[in-house]
Length: 82
Image 1 (cartoon, rainbow, N blue to C red):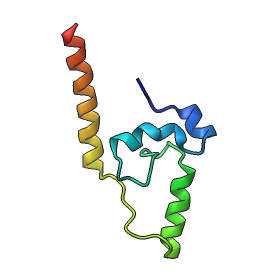
Image 2 (image 1 turned 90 degrees about the vertical axis):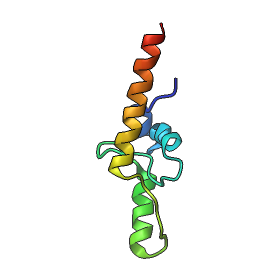
Image 3 (image 1 turned 120 degrees about the vertical axis):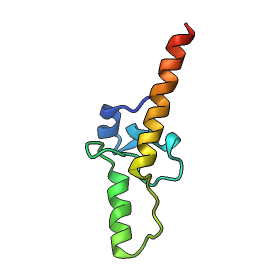
Image 4 (image 1 turned 45 degrees about the vertical axis):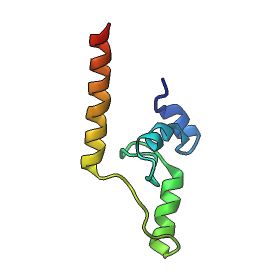
């Protein structure tokens, strides 16, 4: 099972949140929570602010919530199968 890893996230400048990319493939941001350090995202935000990037996409809070519920439900369903 692939999971996000805060140690790799910190040392790898955001790469530890790569699992978020698989959940939200369209998102330019890998660190979806305030505590998930994501240096490439900060650079993209700066480029957007300076006008060098536009139409940058990130998931809405409601979508993140729905995905977290799917993950939890999937986990609980797997427990029931055993």
